[in-house]
Image (cartoon, rainbow, N blue to C red; front, side, top):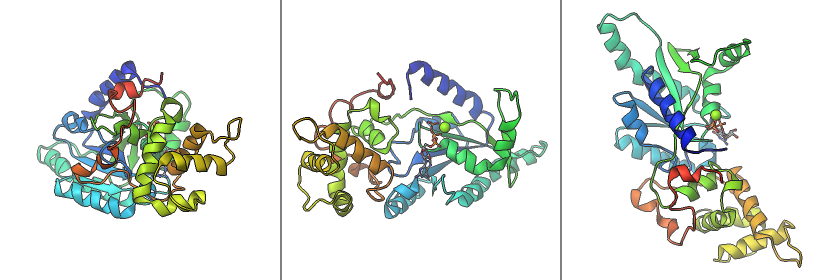
Amino acid sequence: MQWYPGHMAKAKGLIYNNIKLVDLVLEVIDARIPAASSNPEIIKIAGEKPRLLILNKADLADPLVTDKWQKWYKEKGEYALALNAVSGRGIREVIAISRQLVQPTMAALELKGRKKRPARLMVVGIPNVGKSSLINRLAGRRRAATGAKPGITRGKQWISLAGELELLDMPGVLWPSRRDACLGLKLAATGALPLESIPVEEVAHWLVTLLLERAPQQLRKQYGLPTLPPDPYQILNYIGKKRGMLLPGGVSDLNRAAGLLLREFQNGQLGRVTLELPAEENNNEVCGHDPGGIKDLAPGTIFAGD
Ligand SMILES: Nc1nc2c(ncn2[C@@H]2O[C@H](COP(=O)(O)OP(=O)(O)OP(=O)(O)O)[C@@H](O)[C@H]2O)c(=O)[nH]1
Ligand SMILES: [Mg+2]
């Protein structure tokens, strides 16, 4: 994934142009990092249009913490639904709430005497949160039918959904915007940044620190650790030995062990763990140690891929 200012400007332009056409914005965020994966700028861009937050990859997040996030959003007057866009769990609610949210707009149009039309939806979100999966879920076979036609224009495609809804067949790619000290670490740990572009050992060190706090037994079980040493590097060292990731001389290859741990975390093999709690003051709790070189980078730089 390459992401640099040129692309960012283009993505921004696409969102500005398309958002005018829709009645509801579905912002897909990662249920494991709801704050770090959302972009509050979308609220400004969307203006008066309602927004529905989709806490996607809910199957990988701690369900109790997801409940807390949902309550937290509700208190702020926002709608947030948990979803697994791969299995489809939660999709019915997404459709039902979407219909409710567009209802006032559609009623107002009708009052003005406008011709009745389906309500229009657009999916937005930062890279890798599951925008395409959601579109496929919502559209089902209908999308395949549209895409299968030869010579399809590159212009806008609307997919009609059940319940008088229409979906823009193209997600709006948002850019991460939070100036959170842990932003880079959180995006890297959840897979929003490719492993090749990040200092894997630093990210794994940070993640293990957090897992020691939130999911110590899962960590222990997954790697057959007899005890849990407090130093994350010792744990990575153990994983390297255990999985046969050795450097010449028989020492553990920490870089490979770190990559393995990140992949297994991203696959859910270390259990359902949420990396951020809803209270603002808790978001930086495990960033106490120096998260290293990627914490201060501007969002555009994080995605520069060089
Ligand atoms: N476990 C799990 N994986 C998911 C879920 N939704 C999407 N994924 C996976 O996450 C990865 C990214 O999903 P996409 O739908 O391609 O995400 P995207 O936002 O369109 O990504 P970009 O187009 O790169 O910005 C894929 O490997 C999906 O299978 C989910 O709810 N649960
Ligand atoms: Mg996509």
